[in-house]
Amino acid sequence: MLMEIFHPWWKSGAVPANLVGKRRQVFYETEKKLPLRQIIIIQGLRRVGKTTLMYQIIDSLIKKGTDPLNILYFSFDDRTKSPIEILKEYETEILKKDLRSEKIYIFFDEIQKVPDWENAIKIIYDSYPNVKLFISGSMQIVVSKKTRESLAGRFFDIHVEPLDFWEFLEFRNISIDRERVELYENEIKVNFEEFLKTGGFIEAINMNDMEKIQYFKESILKRVAFIDIPGVFRIDYPEILYTLLEIFSTYPGMYIDYKNLASDLKIDQRTLSEYVNLLEKALLVQKLYNFSNNRLTSERKLKRIYLSNTGFVYALNPEVEFPVVFEQYVVNTTKTQFFWRSPQKNEVDVILLWNNDVIPIEVKIRERIREKDASSLFKFIKKYNAQNGMMITLNTEKTLEKNGLRVNLVPYWKAVVKNTLAP
Image (cartoon, rainbow, N blue to C red; front, side):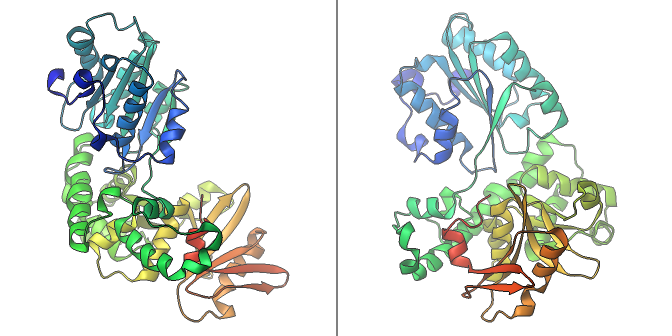
């Protein structure tokens, strides 16, 4: 079985260039942890580059002198063997020596497909102190109670994200002077709209719009809804998972009314809640809570939901308007958990918690901005004693002040290129 797995380095002593790709910052962050004993858990959306990162680490190890036979890669995407069985076969058929005799590097891809994988990985980690383990998952595999308990103190988690806008420009060989971005306003706007359609997925960069739609639907959304989630969790209606994605793309940021939505879909309300949680675990949706100083209170209040990537929205709702998808971009980029809606229905799109500061952000992509457009921001700043607020606009750039409170208005393209939204 193992001899059929693609391990070209076992024969050639090198990883093919087409598997390695271009190194991103996440590679260097991961490489720093190579000398450490702990397991490296790599998480991220399907097709985001987790496997490529593994190949890049393998390539680096070989180039630094590691024996290629001391490196095992195995994907559980379409295979059902356990990690321990794989390791035993590798030891007897390929390594042909005791697994404890030398430094060994093991890469297990899409580990969430393996039942009770946490205990298997714990056994390997505890039994073979010379083995460095890398495991990846297309779900939130380290947030589960079982993972935290089984592997407590035994791992570091690495998140592989889609490209950010600057990386996107780099991959397209487009050069913009970061110190003089005002000179490149038109180039930034044109490329940013294309970036939103790709969602930062490297494979989508050179696709036309129809190819992008098919790519996101078939390679990611349908694959996760109909294969990945049902392969890990027992569910009765995988088609409902995909229907929910379509609904969330039509109404980005919609308030979740489980009772009415369950009635429309003709399923049990508890089942609907479970399915939304599964989509969140699969990294396809992002749930926001109504902000409160008390987190428990927040979780009991209204919730809003967005897809996790702008490319998904364009694929399922190609006619979506730019202001709507930009709001989702802000939500996705900042990784926020909160919005705000008062009992009087004052609303703020995004609430960020940065370095113990609370920062409210409102998205108003329109030609004309009036002072009353910032009224909810000022109310939030006063209520929660925030330092200031931000409004992201189409072209308006100025500062609004009211009773000593301040709201900074920033054109969207400047907010993007100046990393104003960086988490």
